[in-house]
Every structure is written in C-alpha cells, then in structure tokens.
Image 1 (tube, rainbow, N blue to C red):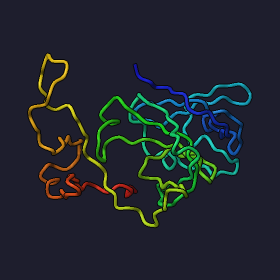
Image 2 (cartoon, helix red, strand yellow):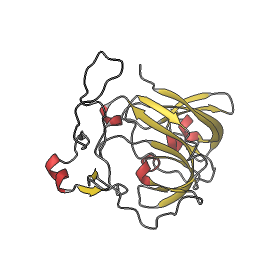
Image 3 (spheres, rainbow, N blue to C red):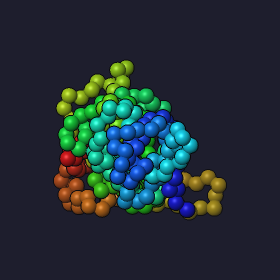
Image 4 (cartoon, helix red, strand yellow):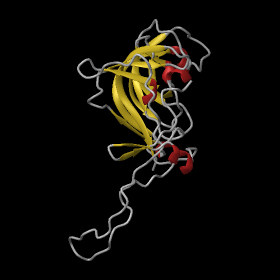
Amino acid sequence: MATLNVNIPRFYCYLRKEFLYDGSAHHNEFIQVCVFGVSSISGRALGFHVLTDNGAVIWRLPINALCHKINASSMPVDYLQFWDCFSYEITCTKFDRLAESRVKVHLKDGAWEGGQYMFTLDWYGNEDSEEAGEGGHKCAHIIALDNGNFGAQPNNRLQWFCPAFVTPFKEKPDYITNTRVWKVEREQETSTGYFYDSNQMHSQEQVNLYAKGSRTQADLSKNQTSCNGTQHISVTPALTED
C-alpha cells in the first residue's frame, strides 16, 4: 500500500486565505494554521495538511499557500518547489546534523534566497524515485525562506552553512551527478557449511548499473580517472539547472 500521507514536524504559520475560496476571493488576507502533514501524489506538487485556528482541517495545499510572514510576496509554486512528487511512497526525516542550519536556496530565476532548514521529504518505490543520474531521484528539503515563504528544494539547489565546519563556496563547485549504483551481492559460493570461504577473487572494479538516459559505457570509459586505486567517472555537472 502506498504511503501517500505522512506526519511532518508540525509548525505554525499563515495560510493565504484565497486558498480557502478556490482563489476567487479574500486575496491578501491570512489565517493562522498548524501544518501537520503532507501528501504525495505522483506527478503533482506536494500537498500540505493544516489545522486552522477556527477548527477546520484543510487538505493538500500547495507550498505557496503557506507563509511565515504576512508581508511575504506571493511566489509561483514552481519557484518554491522545484520537482513534482516522484512517487506515492514518501518519507519524512528531520536530520540531526542539518537541524536549524542556515542555508541559501538557488531559485529558478537565478537569485539566491537565505533560509533555515526544517525537515526533508524523500520518495521511494519506483524507478523515478530510486534511479541514479540526472533523471533519477531527488529529495525535497523544506526550508523556511527569509522572504517569508517556504521552499521544497533538492540538494543541488542549496548551499549549507555551519561556521564550525563549512567554508562557503564563492562559486558553484563543478561537482558531477553520479550515474552509478552499487551492489555487493554478485557471485558467491553456495555451501551448506555454517562458515564458508570465498575461493574466487573477483575484479576490484565495481559493477556499474547505468540509469536511464545516462551515457554509454564507451562514453564513460573515456572519462575514467584513477584516484587512490578507485575509479571515478565524469558525468553531467550538478548545480547547473536553470
């Protein structure tokens, strides 16, 4: 059974009131809400579940319906959430190491906006949510933006800050998107013995399983380099999406 709905770390903010009237009335008006859950319908924007301060529960609101400052300018939903949901199967995690971290978000128009990490949504259960490569999985970090809105952004749209550990980059690194997955169960002896030995030494090269849309083995072989005996393969740069 699909997950569809998950609990999230609840937070309090404002709901743009026009979303209670199908966009037809009460523009530039707000009510206070508690946001407590999220739904994931594959191919659609995230849907946030809220409890209003007058006792109504409203289901599946887009992220641009919410703000934490009344003077926040309304932004298009595709500026705030970069990718539609990848699956009906969704998880929510608040990572301890990232909790309360400051972060900058690279928005769709090329501008950078500061914010604070809240929690992370991630998907599983189908090819779109689990494959490697440019066409593969992305998570959505939920960020309270300094401009008063909320964002749901993938890793390669963010720059994180931690003064005790991080030296912020001034130019985007030329990191490359990984197209490989790793598997350890390849070939092994079959034995009735409780303990068994592997009598055959296999190649040290990892089995490469290539995602849809990634380059061919011949293309990848041209870009292999060696670093401490481990092979690395150059693929398409991250942090370059428009």
